[in-house]
Amino acid sequence: MLTLLHEWLLAPFDYGFMKRALVASFALSLAAPPMGVFLVLRGMSLIGDAMAHAILPGVALGFLLAGFSLPMMSLGGILSGLLVAVLAGSVSQMSGQREDAAMASFFLISLAAGVMIISLGGSSVDLTHVLFGSILAVNTTSLLLIAAISSLIVVTLAVIFRALVVECLDPLFLRGQGVRGSLVHGIFLGLVVLNLTAGFQTLGTLMAVGLMMLPATAARFWSKRLEGLIAVAIGIALVASTGGLLLSYHFNIPSGPAIILLAGVGYVFSALFGSQHSLRRRLRRRAAPLGAPEPH
Image (cartoon, one colour):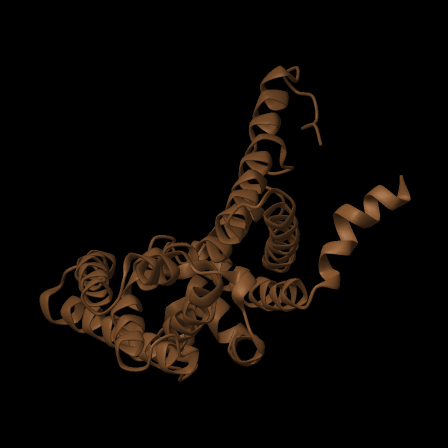
């Protein structure tokens, strides 16, 4: 039994590429879910998906200029994502259109432009690699870049944590304390762009947002406190990342989709059996006699 467990759970990580993939996925799992939690709290759940596609033109231009150079593609993705965020915010302020509507419009333009650029300068294999990533192909340079970006996100989030919480719940109070809410909002969107840029190499631009949002939405079924939401989301992301890599190794399936699908399984399980607002809780509440204490 122990031998079987070792072969299935530990032996795959004897290989260097699996170790690098595990470290990269752990780095993303620590940085991405807290961002997703704040996106959910701010009612911006779909903004993450829009921003994931906003980095695509920059990634495509970096690929066109330097091939599969992660630093160049990451720089292009960061600049492209920040540009789209600024443009969407500017259009929203000048026209009165809601920011999510402006972001959705630029997201569609960015997606089409990115796919067009890659198609003109590369092959279908190149397009697949950029759109869906390959975490098992992470090399030392990619790992260092992912770790550096993830560390920067965690440190910055810790610095602005209190201001970000207040900005989510009571922006007028934050303004009364002399802190510009727009500055906090801008820094937060910049962190989202950085996070998605770190994730595109491993999960691709189409699924990088999955590790950010699925654990965060699943966590809502387990905790009401912000600290609990973040802890549960990180835990789900870590389990999904490790399990996805093992499934990819043993069954020869794409690693990125395996990780995101496991995170999706975690979301469905949470929605059915979680301790807060899940289907199980609702059914038990209906079955409880009138006047009886709420079941736990």
